[in-house]
Image (cartoon, rainbow, N blue to C red; front, top):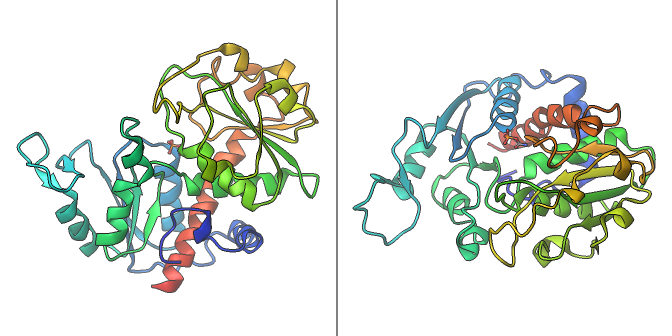
Length: 315
Ligand code: CP
């Protein structure tokens, strides 16, 4: 695997899930693969799970890891070409990227959508520059439009918990006080469609995701109707794509509560975390035996390890 930026880079999902099972059975079986190899992880935005799980996965493979928080302790980076750099950013990505590449074998990058310029965000301005100029395989640790390590972990989790060959998976928008990117729902939709589940997206009008991610998935504006018979409920907030980056609603009638879960077929509750209780989901639901948010987060180590293992095998 050269880069890991979207579902397209993983190939056959059944093979990938089987590889995940193999890694999970013995996560130290490939601890020689990464000997004397180094991964740099670069964070333009905060993280708990991605940072720790990816670092752990790299260490399981015997790699050295270096983590740089761009906002803390590194020079502020200019990302656009052609600007006069007379502001507060003393270094340009175009120098920083090859320098970072010279210190490592694999680069991980987290760079969220700015939610101001839709064209720049959906053009993946930052991560594409790493692909073009680092000379190293690049792992998305969540880019402006996708979070593939999360979606791969979500897929592994659904495969572990499903009791039907083709479960009904519902992605539901839920309220949040701050404007969030569309990366997680975009990516989740892309992976659920590739897995060929019975996949339904529900959200208030105005929160439509980009057609290239929705594809042929069913969109249902009535959340209760969408949840009927669901096997998995995946809650997530996102800001508007049409009215780019805006919060159009904080309607708490969309919060996932026990009454909503009662409409499902005893569904498992999922969320990528961090999650705002009382907004996205009630305490009762997230603490219930059918909440699988913790094993879902634990599978982030496994998805990262499969991806890094494949990259190391190609170095
Ligand atoms: N789900 C996820 O990516 O979590 P972090 O933002 O904490 O890394």
